Amino acid sequence: MATRLFPMLSCGDLERSLAFYRDLLGGVEAYRFPEQGAPEFMVLRIGESEIGLGPVAAQPLHGRPQRPATGHRMELCVYVDDVDAVFARASADGFEAVADPAETPWGERTAWLADPDGNLVMLTG
Image (tube, rainbow, N blue to C red; front, side, top):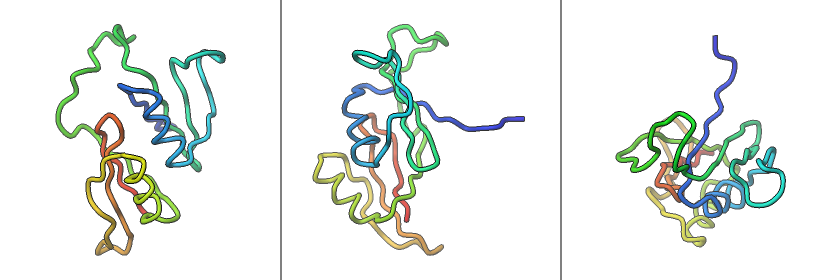
């Protein structure tokens, strides 16, 4: 039986992805490898969750190519205190807006962004 889900993203531009997940969404560094110098892998804690970020590897450990990824492969749902404020900041910071903030029939406010690698991120509040 699984005990925990831990998403890990392969990033074309790790610094730009850190600007999205750390700076925009408030992620806090929980782990870095190696500890000094440019990271090869980082874990960010966002609220009660964690996400792993690493650069696209020429030879990934599993042996399967990480690029080119095509189509809509996955989505992340991120709960935020103020959907409109985070969406506005993301747009100002040059991140791709996919769908403007709107009320849903189930009572949440949502908006959609694309992270620097094109993964869809639904802001929810």
